[in-house]
Amino acid sequence: MASTIAAAPVRSAGPSLRVRLYATLGVSGLISLVVIVIIASAAAFAPWVAPYDPQTTDLTSVFASPSPSHPLGTDALGRDLLSRLIWGGRTTFIGPLLVIIVSTIIGSALGITSAWVGGHVDNVIARFLDVMFALPGIVFALVAVAIYGAGLTAAVIGLSISYIPYVARVVRGAALRERKLPYVAACSVQGFSALRICVRHLLPNLRTIITAQAVASLGFAVVELAGISFLGLGVQPPTPDWGVSVATGLQAALQGYPAEALYAGTLIVVVVVAFNVLGDRLAATAESAKR
Amino acid sequence: MSVGGFLARRFVGFVVTLLIASFAVFSLMYIAPGDPLSFVLGTRSVSPERVAAAKARYNLDDPFLVRYWDWLTGVLHGDFGRSIVLNQEVSDLISVRLQTTALLVGYATVLFLLVGVALGAAAARRPGPIDSTLTVFATFAIAMPTFVLGTVLITFFAVELGWFPVYGAGVGIVGRLNHLTLPAVTLAFASAGYLARITRSALRDELGREHVETARSRGLSERSVFRRHVLRNALIPIVTVTGLTIGALIAGAVIVETIFALDGLGSLLVEAILKKDYPIVQSIVLILVIVFMVINFLTDVIYTLIDPRLDLGADPNA
Image: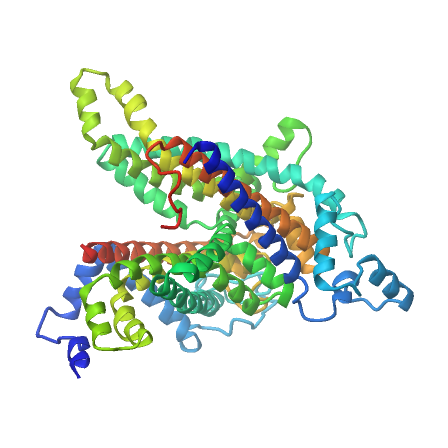
């Protein structure tokens, strides 16, 4: 079982997790990671963290200013803003996460197939991806919504499709470089099937590049999905969501109460910056590891 | 390969891609759940006579490919069908809206080009605090979604300060530009940040080259070194990014027009999706696809032509 020995990671008493994280991410990357973990855990543990139910209305205190009972105030229906933001983090994270998972799996499969098989298959996949590249993600999402009706599911399907070419192009390039390396030939000589080499050996070695691409795309997916919800085509009110909050917040802002729009907008920008910085750092690490 | 041959080959590829895309747009609307009849009649219940009339008008009993061919020839003659909800010719609806969108995207393009290149050049030429401030600014600008920025701008400049109108498209040239200023700034913001970043790194790469050192040692003024030797060589990535960014601006216009209640193509598309007015959706998506492809094609051609080092016969995907 030579292959299992070769593939097994060597666990030596190396630097601690903290040191390794710092070496990979740097200060800005670490801060971004911490910010994301805090906001994501608040959303994940929303039932315990949020002071109120996000949907409970209280018409006796509409547009309340921040106070000890409502730390960020309330909206036009007297709902607690802090609770709505905490709960809204759920759809805001889960939607983009699904988009990235689906597009990464399909894109990686296409990219590796393209690089491994080559020839006509590679050409056909490349042409097909070129057509998709020409269109921004929001167009795919809008078409999906037009077909399946407004909602998070349709928007996620549309965006997932639109992210496939980006993953496929990056993975194809990396897989082309990787397959020239001697270990791939060594595996072939041992008579391993193409599928086994790709899945068990090639894929694990591409994981840094795939992860960097996925994290960098997360930020864009957050913006695009929240934008679709803002248009009223994604997450449907009264379900809390940051994109929806900006939309209802815009109406409130026109009446002179900009709080909700500003809080939700700030959260979106912070999360997107954090994902982008993290993605840049991971990409830089993947780049330097290549050399 | 000659330039003419290169252009001809690219153009053929472009037309083929367009045909594929038009077929995709046409068939997409038919995979929507339900009968194609609900697609042309909407979800209301209608009399059998209207059903028969609709079947005849849209040739719904014809094979799929025949229907595609009819639709395509209709589109090529400017016939995009009729809106279900508004009961008007789609081509009339679109031609009015096209102006607003074109003006908005044009305005935003001028803004992001000027600001992006200026900021990028400033950052590249002044390392230190100016550079790092601009880099942080660009990072935030890129992460700023249009709908957040638009909301913030409306809140401060239209509602609080009253400097700009909140909604609408305005009349006359001055009125329209005034009404379009906040939307155009909103639309251009992220792209300006992105272009600034690209310009900065392109100029940085170029400033470190030996030919720049040579030009300086020949005693040329810093100004002329920058203009004639650095900027010109850095133009290639800048042009490429500009082309792709204009495509992104058109997509962004969908959201910006909705925020500012502008009567453009994007806001019409969103309304049509919400009302399930499929002929409008189909036509606007097709127009968007065509515009994106034309822009990509032109960018591709321009960038290949201005960079004499590129091999015209090379496979673009290699």
